[in-house]
Image (cartoon, rainbow, N blue to C red; front, side, top):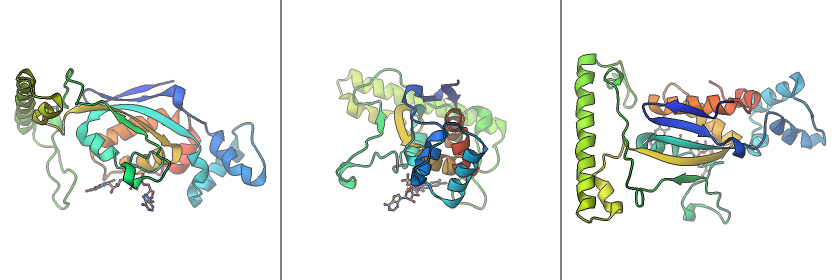
Amino acid sequence: METKVNVLDKGYVKLETNNVMGDDLSPVNDAKVSFDRESDEFGDKEGRLLDFLGREGHTSPFRHSFLKFEIHAPLMVARQWWKYVIGSDHAEQPLRNQDPHEAWNESSRRYVTESVEFYIVEADEWRSAPENRKQGSGEPLPLEQGEKLTEELIRNYEEGHRRYQEAIEAGVAVEQARLFLPAYGLYVRWRWAGSLQGVCHFLNQRLAGDAQSEIREYAEAVHTLSKQHFPNAIDALVRN
Ligand SMILES: Cc1cc2nc3c(=O)[nH]c(=O)nc-3n(C[C@H](O)[C@H](O)[C@H](O)COP(=O)(O)OP(=O)(O)OC[C@H]3O[C@@H](n4cnc5c(N)ncnc54)[C@H](O)[C@@H]3O)c2cc1C
């Protein structure tokens, strides 16, 4: 069974398989408790029940199963991912009720000074601004322009990294020195746990064509890894 999928130039999604709770039978039996029934095996009848639950939006049986991931991604991806708070609650304390379910832990650049890594866009991966929309991307840019952009991006990263190191050497606190690092392309590592429904909600939005392609690649990895454990339940909830 696959536990890690590499994404972009240095990123990955890792499924913490010891921390997967449930399988396709779990939402089936969590729904069947209404009739005080239980299935021992997953068959056609159970598949039809999952499809019915997904189709009709009876989602509560999908909230008793959980998955936990470790993700290594540029901050621009983490920033979009962080918005998924339901079933993977990491809202600030005042927004929570009495029962916090903290489910986001990230490596801290207040403490960590080594291994600064940046997302490098290859020359043939640059996209133009879209013509009739405010967000998203249009057609690929010409290779010649892409080569120049990649060079400039690397130069920008190197410059920021150099200034960051100089600040640390000059005695600046790491938590402030990090202001010199170009943030959006900086790789960050975090753990994210969510209910099966929460993960599927993320997948529905981030596998869609209007999601930024970088987070879409991460969503494809989450999809691949999760489907190994919940193939039918995920098909019932994920539309794309
Ligand atoms: C293509 C795209 C572009 C985006 N652009 C922007 C942007 O420009 N700026 C920006 O800030 N965000 C943007 N977002 C993020 C978006 O606004 C959501 O925050 C994000 O998609 C998470 O979805 P969610 O809120 O449904 O998820 P969750 O927070 O996990 O919520 C899941 C579901 O729970 C329910 N729910 C959640 N909170 C409440 C509540 N308080 N009361 C009642 N029901 C609730 C809703 O049904 C919600 O769909 C974008 C998302 C996408 C996919």
